[in-house]
Length: 193
Image: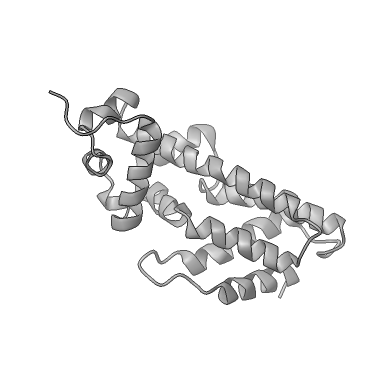
């Protein structure tokens, strides 16, 4: 006899359930049973759609990374408008207020997951590296428009911004930083001070 409720978009419902468990309880509590319980379905549902739990987690991480593309497009379109520091502050806050910090914790806590992700992403920390790569075209456009220093090394600036702002958000149990704190870090990094 089937248990749980009917799932229409099984993958997305399982991913959303995993995200809720990850955000609420942290990476050490993320198990197939916790995910399926959160999604309200039988444990076998996850294993019908994924070869094993680490395959599920790898797909979750890649799905959440794909969401950065939409945010990156919006950021690129903002080049030449508003203030550079404001645009970056908004984009970085949106990124790190999402599940990104928890995903980084998940990736760093699971060796098998990291190994699977290395197949597609041989360097860097998934999601952080992807976010830096997403920032670079925006920074390049702003440099071309003369809104950041003409000699700014965007390939260094982008990961520096990601790392500095990630540090503000990294304590998942703490209070998220104020927008003003993020803006202060962004301003200092792009000014080179």
